[in-house]
Length: 248
View (cartoon, rainbow, N blue to C red):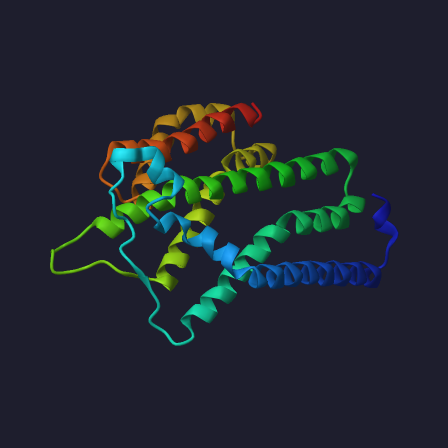
């Protein structure tokens, strides 16, 4: 803990430098994403097209026409959504660099064992969040989009979705799945604090499975068991993995 001899103002100056570097990285990557508009929105809009990889894999299980139409209803809507998506992409791409900056800033104040634990938490946390977000993009959001765009209360009502609603729902589901995938990391941290044990997780396994299935049904409001299983299974496996990583 060689950082303990620094004065308060020196720590404050280091923190200011950290924040400046983080802002510079995020802004630079946001501008870069803004400039690559075509590639960015090809990626964002891919789940709305019938040739998306999931629909091709599902084959006959997917409806032949899932592109019910995406519209913009506000004068500045497309510009604002461009800015929002570019900023979100910039933040996501800068996350590993930001984590490195934060780890380097905190490292001098930690013992070697604490440094290793922090590095492992950052690395596994980032990988699991990315895996959850990727699963949402490839599986959860397309299935929810397919169901909602083909659901109708009357043949007289046609489905069209605003671009703002489309992007907001995609981001919400990606963030939710990313957070859900943090379960092993959170379980490990709670066990280290003495708030969670392996025995308790095994004891409440049935309750956890029920909660996982319920949450999956809310996240993907479809009516088929296959979709529910495809979403529930990874989260249940993460719960089982969490039992293995917690301390006794």
